[in-house]
Image 1 (cartoon, rainbow over the protein chains, first blue to last red):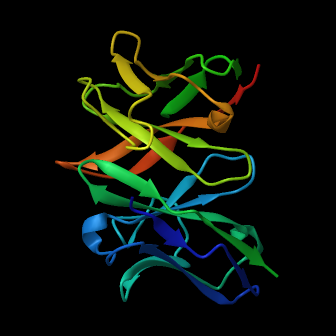
Image 2: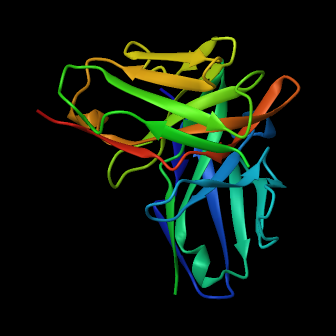
Length: 110
Length: 121
């Protein structure tokens, strides 16, 4: 069974930079996994931040960027703001029409 | 403005079937892919599967034996049935639309607000 891995939590200072990663239990993440990043605040539905590795969804601030770093997909928040405090989920396409979410990363801004 | 609205019973007994419907407004269900996702209390998101308007489906392997998705184009709705439910199926269930370009679907761009389903006797 394929598992998508994310850091459980991260803390970042206001104005700081944080990079979240999204890996596979076996193998490397590539653009062929079409990495997505979703942001979710408590009680709300997720919203898309990044799709297809590095494309920002409509209305998403430029401080959010996606990339492949080494063997993982990555989401970088540059100049973190208080309202970036959320849960962040990556999602990968693993083939045969199957999509898998990572376990999520809780980001605290303080 | 495209809106998705989940509906269905909020309480289901163990071993019974969970049935939810997602009503789509502001867009046609045709020629598009649609998904169900769930989130147990305090836990992460789980992709349940997707359905194309034609009725073709793809399910999470871990749920495949218990899931059936269907589409009703005349009502602009799609549905989820999860049978033999257990307490671990208690979750917020979301429906969502896929953004696709050509043969590739990239991400879920429109989500419903979610509906809470509790499995309990």
